[in-house]
Structures are given as structure tokens and as C-alpha cells.
Length: 315
Image (cartoon, rainbow, N blue to C red; front, top):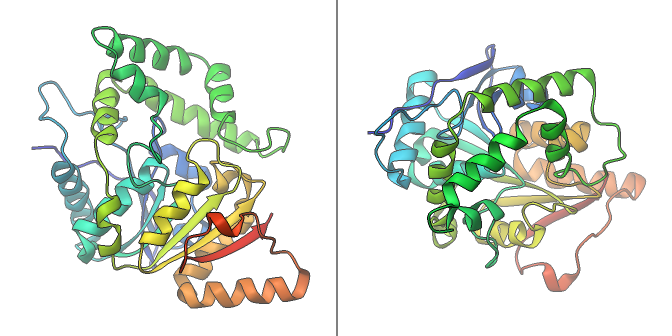
């Protein structure tokens, strides 16, 4: 049995209950700087991904399965929030996990916020570099471990690798606070076991929730960076089209880290979604468009699935 992750508590105030799940090769410490403001006004807990410190799987752990992973997160939510439903905020792989929890344990989920998320281990037939490396016979896991260890070895190598996720590297979004946060993330990764992260990557590669998306019946806010080079925006839009209660916001000139690259905008979007619901989001976007003309289409109609509720914004 897969043990449940321990919570990293970000806030413990009366208010909305929020669970935040980071992306691949990150850590719960990431949210100390980049959590939505509204989450910090209530009870907010960050959970790691399997194999990512502080969630060490341990020697002889059972093979990772979707059921085991969902059960582990569900047990943690029931333990930490007394079984009350929470808002799930998931970035990238954390969004994938959030969708799985919402599908299999809807009783624990009031709404979902996705940023740079995906619904299957392969995006529209594309395969991640890590997955390709791990499928190499004999040397795959060793090579993965070597590259992972080299990436997190120093502050600078980790920083430059992380910068590949942003759209405009010239924008000064880095501050002393964000740099200190990313160093905490790196320290957690140094405490992780590469072979456990590799096992999680292999599970993810063979897992898809695409056929089950229409069965997820909770409100979803899907925030997409139009310049995301990690998860193709087209995949994120197709994901949204399959969700029955999804509102998608596309931010122009933003990459895979919208919570860092467009923090005030993302903060406002998530607050409106939680306080006003999807209808309030739509009304606010329309009002903004009328006042300032700030909304701008960033996708051709050919790439926009029919029936998708999309707001395109220039940041």
C-alpha cells in the first residue's frame, strides 16, 4: 500500500480549503512564493508528487498505480481537512493528478484550478524527453539519474533549467524571494531519490485520463500560457473541451509558469473563480474587454474546439 503524503502547511486560517500540487521535479516549497493569495487567507496545504521529497516511497514500495496514487492523496485530504471538499490547484503534472482525484473522489473536490496541465503522459502523440530516456534498454534509468543529478547539482544549473519554462526570459520576475524559494525546491530535490522519480515518470507515461474527462463534474478553471513550450497549448485546449464545466483563460506572451510570469492576473482569476464562480469570471472578462480592449485572441478558430468556453487575454 502506498502511504499518503505529508502536508506542507502554507496557511491555517479560517476560510477556503485548498490543496496545491506542484509539477514534475519541483517540490511543495514552490508554493510558498507562488500560491494564490486567496489560498493563503484560508487553510492551504501543499502535497508533493510521489517520489519527490518529502514523499519518499521507501525500499520495496509497491508498483505505482492510478488507484494507489489517488487513494494516497484522498487519505491525506481526509486526514488534513476532516473529509471536507477542497479546491485543488495543480500545476503541470499536479494538474494531471488533480484531474484524477476529481474523477475518482469527487466527494473531496469542490473545484479545480489547472495551470499548464495535461490529461495524458503523451501530448497529442508527443513523448517527453524523460520518458524516451527511461525507455532505453539497460542504460535508461542510469542516464536519467545522471542527468537529473547534474541538473540539480548547483543553483545556477537548476536556475537555467527552470528558466526554460518561462516565455520571456528578459522579464524580471525573479526576486530575492523567488530565488530563495527555488533554492528550497532544489534542496528538496537533492533529498529525493532519482529512481523513485523515474518510477513515477514511467507510471505517468502509460496513464491517460482523456476518455474520462467528460465524467469530471466539478467546476474547472484552466489557465493556459499561449507561449507554453512544455505542454502544448493545443493539448490544454483539447483537455478543456472535454470537461463539461471548464472555463479556460489563455494568457498571451506567457509560458509554463503563469503563476510566476503573470502573478497579479492569475491571482485575480483564481480569486474570482473561487468567490464568484465561472459565471463571475465570464462577466469580469467581458467588462475588462469593454473598458480597455485588453482581451486579444491568440488562437485561430481552427484550433478552438466547438463549445469551449475560452477567454483570451493579453498580459
